[in-house]
Length: 142
Image (cartoon, rainbow, N blue to C red; front, top):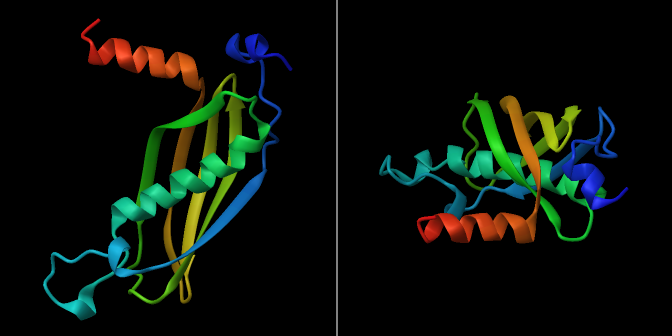
């Protein structure tokens, strides 16, 4: 598949139902601290979302051409339960739709005891060099 066919909206070679999984250990750098008690330090929602995004990105990346990557365009997540520091969390992304360069996912996460989050995520495939040029133009006020 040529890069031009992908940029014109051709379907990416990613199968609906493709899945990816990642795991993390909740450490102090990924935990909230604003409650003031060490016992209340749990996985912070921004870190939860970041791990959903990276799990989805890692799923898509092997299907892309050299010079391509994906950027997050939408996240809709419910953080259902707290995960204490020292506990592990498992993140799963599943492709639910592919429309041109847009890829949609169902995302879920569990800790050692229960489901901790669920939702949807969307990523858009970009040519990294073209994307960087657009960002630089925006920075320059163009």
